[in-house]
Image (cartoon, rainbow, N blue to C red):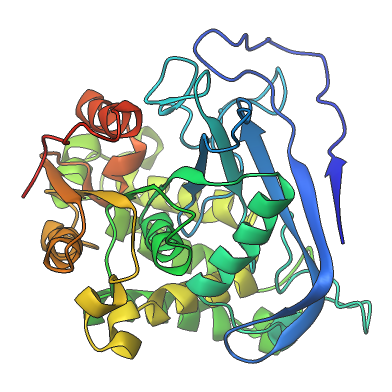
Length: 398
């Protein structure tokens, strides 16, 4: 059993954002699955919710849906504005909208906050029906496959007969890849950006340091903390460190260099933020703790670490054998978290498995987050891959 609930209308005040080449004012919705959901761990919960947004319209044949899969710290709000006074639009507003690379005049775009998240979807901060208290660490361990299975239930609810494409960057790329493996007859195309088929030891290490920053904060209290409290210091530190991995040395040097804050004055012998980069990272940490749950951070980073389809199948080629989707994999030269060779390895494995796959590598000094930023080259790649006819061979190959 499911239900679909609209969020309250956006307030009509402040500077108004008109649609133009944007999707305009959007309202998140909530999908509720009331049945038992069993996780890959064998643990189960009685029902869950996913908060999601849609843009555009589903066509008569119900096969023009594009599923947008978000990264670790992302959510369902990937385009448009929640109110006329919003300071920022959705996180991929530059890519999604009428006339944009993911054209909402042509496609029905769906984006959901993942299971285990904290932006309206069921996760560790949600109330356990059995106790009325937040699940905390009693919440089942979540895998990328669990996230995909829950989103497939949402797509079924929306009446989607077939995905025109699943796309995402970083963890979103893993999610898109898993959709193509788990539901091969349902997923016609996939776009994987700045991602990997399994993390390196270094990437796992960074996630572990972030988790330890949270768990060593006394306010974490074994995962049992009030909604407005918890390990805010530990979560801020985890975010600061992770954010460094999303950037590049050249990009940080261009943006900050060794510039000092005006308020820092001369050689101030204190531990207050003196350099602009210090101030920036502290701001990132503080803004993150106001919108993200520490336990969700633990669960989602662990899900990313555990993603390794080749391990169970014996090889990545065997894991990708069920895939029917045509694939575009995009790497970025300055991405040292999931570097180009890890993205290229996905495309090569698809080709070796006999699949139609293309690889493109974009030169940028913006680091791992390049897939989120303004890039005409990326827009052209995505638009060309989504809008070409099935019979037309895509030009970008390894």
